Structures are given as structure tokens and as C-alpha cells.
Image 1 (cartoon, helix red, strand yellow):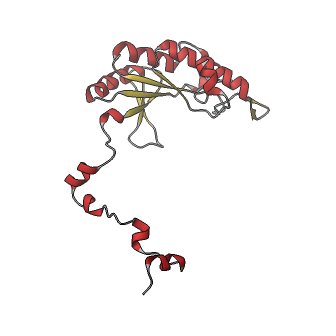
Image 2: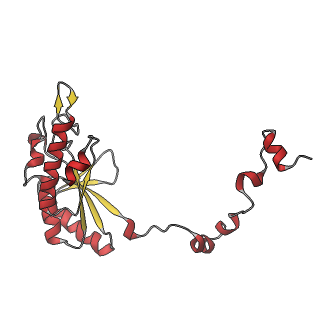
Image 3: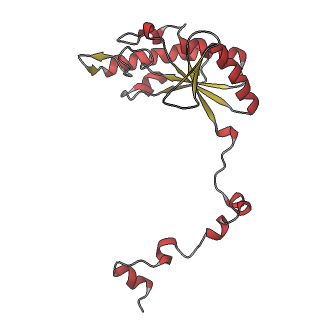
Length: 195
């Protein structure tokens, strides 16, 4: 009969070499023991609710790609944020769906202090100050082509895009954002935003 070491050398595996001498299965077989020894706990304190915002009043629209998820206007968002705060959800991440008529090649509306995400942030902080507001600083909701960067001859221009995103972050912070969360992939944008 081969020893465990001989099996390993020969290319076979012995169970003890795979799992070690400690078998944890006994601690996972019952709910009470799993709860007792679990390393991580997920609670409401760990949640961030992503919300999708549209212009207008008292309006919702389904997002076909995300069944059960809706875009909502700022007035409805504030009411939903109040409910979320009462449930103990600590933060909301906001994503604007900017009207097509406000989009252009460079995403210039991102620099408007009265744009959708800035108005939503101000409303949330005024009406539900206890909830954290995380804003998505990005150009894609504001560009006509949908890219997260300024295009020139079909190529994203990194440095101009970074400057635009950093300036947008200033407006979002001024509106009351608690966390600025860039979702683009431009080189150097974190340093530029922090400066």
C-alpha cells in the first residue's frame, strides 16, 4: 500500500493532502453552527442601493435590461430614499439617465451645476441628510456617442477627458456628494479628481 507521499509523487492525491487534516464540514452541517463560526456577516449596513434617475416629475420607467428595476424622477427618488433610510440602508449610488437632447460629443452638460445628477444630490441631501450619496462621475450619460470619454477622430482623448471628469467631480462635491465614484477607465483620473 502506498503512503500519501508516494501517491503525490506518483500523481495521485490523497484526501488529506487536498483538504488537510482538519475537516470543517461538521461545522457547516447545521444553521446554528454555520452562524456560530462564519467569518463574514452581510447586514443592511453593508448595502448601497443603486438608483437610476430621469428628469420630470412623478414618473417611473422600467429598465428592460434589468427586470424589476426602474428609473425614477427626483421627487420619487427622495421618497424612496426616505424609505431606504428608515430600513437602515446607509447609502445610495446615483446614476443619471440624461435626456438625449442634452447630450453632445464632449458631454458638456456634465459641467452644468444644474444637471440631473447635481439636482438629485442636492435634493437628497436636503430631504434625507442621514443617507450617504455616492455619485457616478462619468461622461457616458452626457455624451451623444455613449462613450465615457471625449472622442477625436474615433479615439478617446485621455487628458481632456480627465480634466472634464475632474471638473465634474467638483460640481458633484459642491452639490453635496459624500463619495465621488469614477466609473471611467481614464489614466490619471483619480489623482486629478483628488487635486
